[in-house]
Image 1: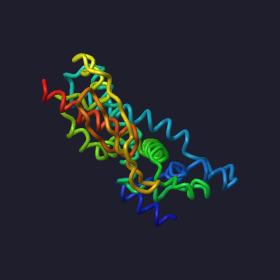
Image 2: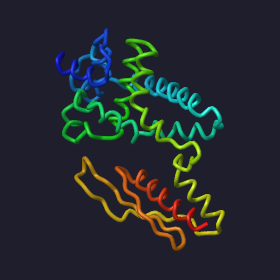
Image 3: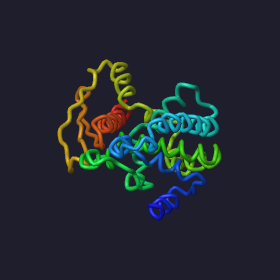
Image 4: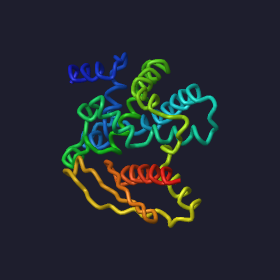
Amino acid sequence: MQSDLSEFESRIGYSFQQRELLIRALTHKSYSHEAKNNALRDNETFEFLGDSVLGFVIGDLLFRRFPELDEGAMSKMKAYLVSSTSLARKARDYGMGDALFLGVGEEKSGGRKKDSLLANLFEAMLAAVYLDGGIDPVRNLIQQSFTEDLEAIDADDLLFQDYKTALQERAQGRGLPLPEYNVIDEVGPDHDKRFIVEVRVGSHVTRGEGTSKKEAQQQAAKHALRELVQDE
């Protein structure tokens, strides 16, 4: 275990002084329940703290990067960056799921690959780093995790914040019918399924793909928006 955790620490770029914090962050409630060890605590409250720390740091980074934007725009950017899909992707990048302590039932149901579980794990890990080393190391971890996302944001094109809402508003403004979304296909195994969604706005029909129906809808809306803008 110690060797495995040392390898994990190398992946996230942080070595814990208090190893028990790392172990707790990696302990899912299913594991602690099955262990029947009152001294073994799970990471649920760490998720709460990690969510707060992440929100603060991302808010600070956005404020400094886009000082000209209003509160609404930055709030939408923040929500986009810290979505469950986004956080699960970060957890996968660090191989957090591989180091997680899971109960037998959760293991059999593919818990290591579930977006919701991985997103919670990422937040719990941020809390552990914060409790062990303070704000500086957790800020560094968040910055290295979100650098590409922040650099990819185009402040002049905020449609990415919520493509579905933006598409609906644009359609209404042009007197078009409200967008209609339909799942037209599901590909891949259950633990790595991708959804293909079609959106129809008047005569415009576009498709989007994602790891969840919501993400696929957002991508479809994004493509539809581009078509509508080009037609104006």
